[in-house]
View 1 (tube, rainbow, N blue to C red):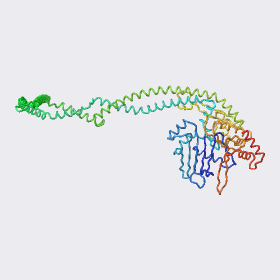
View 2: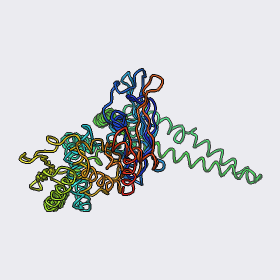
View 3: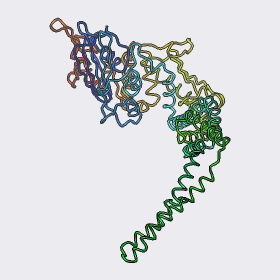
View 4: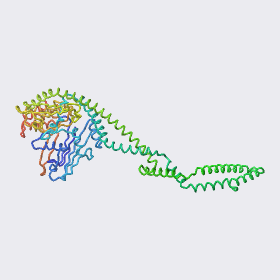
Length: 560
């Protein structure tokens, strides 16, 4: 509900704070006192059109701020959360600033917000009817909501909405998979080529190092053979080789150890040295025997190293990087194969979801068709109570999707296009509301629709500005009673000139316009019972209030 409306430098208003209560808030006052200015300011606050002409003369900026209180609302919290705004407690502060320079700003809980966010929040805030602001009344979505509320189709609507959401999620997933399909085909060819190339190459870790060593050996056969021969001679074969000298030394040490035991360990070490020399000699003979000049093998090694070098340049600069690329390509190929399978699975799921949604939406359509006639009768009866006895009201329900394949017409509300048709005068054909209803007539029609439908289905602040236009007496009583009924489950703000309506107020606000110090000021007073008697008496008789009028006003308040 709207708890506080603060207006600064807007039209004739310099500074104004208006407090509202739950239930029915009635704004009264003389013609031109500023009642509609307050409604206009509220319209700007919730995202209505604004321009610099609305700013009070001589000022550069106008500010309008509203303090709203809400019961726990997951839907509202979700909208705020998507915008990065957290709601601490039940309150929500909305502020709009209008500048003469055209730099208009919107704030939600003191955080700068977009007009788009304000449009998303509007359904939770205020619904205004009057002086051309009838977008809600003329919106076919509202028509469907009113019919469903009257028929108590909430559970069926929820079922359709859930099935629609499931169908839509699957559809989006499938579209994404198919959008990637052409890219997948192109990528598939590339991955297959690269995978085959790397698999044919048979890369192994450490292979390049082994080949480089072999190439060094093959290109230095003669030098290696000479080195082997010389090393073999020096270490083992020559008369004065290391083996011969170590043997001589070992024999001397063994003999010495017979006299000095401390040399035994050295003798053992020399034995080990001879074993090492023998092992070395064996390795030299074996390696020398393996040395063979082979131009063909050298060519093979050179070719393989060139191949490895090419693959390194192409796949990451090193053999490990190329092997990693191969593993990644193999995994991506497997993913693409899984994507093909996923596409088939999603297509099957979409077909099933489409059928389930269509079945539920068709069932909802049938409920609506059955409920429409009753709603029409009750609306026409209620219209007769508010001076619209000759009005005719019809509901057109067009089944847009006649087969489960007509997915273009799927919505979270079903597959119906629901529109209200209306005629206020006998002999005139019924036409869409937007073409035939306006002003006070439209406001009374919306009042009737909401009270007949199910007022508890629309828990937000509802504003009526012209609901009493062209009526009086008994009809005003009926309008007041309907406003009171609507206010049992909604906060209602209503501008009225009719005492018969004002008597129903839970909170009666008197709007005055006064000239002070050469400036025009607008003020609002929350009337107590005594002041209400005076105001209702004025509304009955005009400026010259009589005691008879006061008595009549007191009697009206007793039954209000």
